[in-house]
Image (cartoon, rainbow, N blue to C red; front, side, top):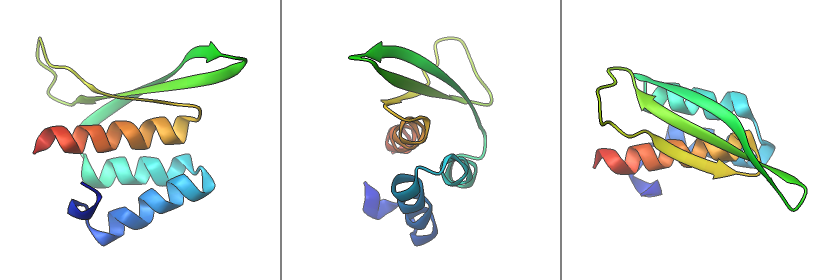
Length: 91
């Protein structure tokens, strides 16, 4: 799946993972999924560590449509996971 994403997007993914940059992850979302909105939450505390959740929703939300979810120990990783799952669902 990673190979199907353009080189500019791969750079944003690497920046998001390397530095934990939420800005890079948001830039990636806006670039590859321009018509979505997102929500982020602290989903749970597992063994004393926070677990963040992100859901991406299509802008033209209809009844029965499911969002793409990502869960991770940081908001940035959760967002990148949700982006990749949303892109995977497009195929």
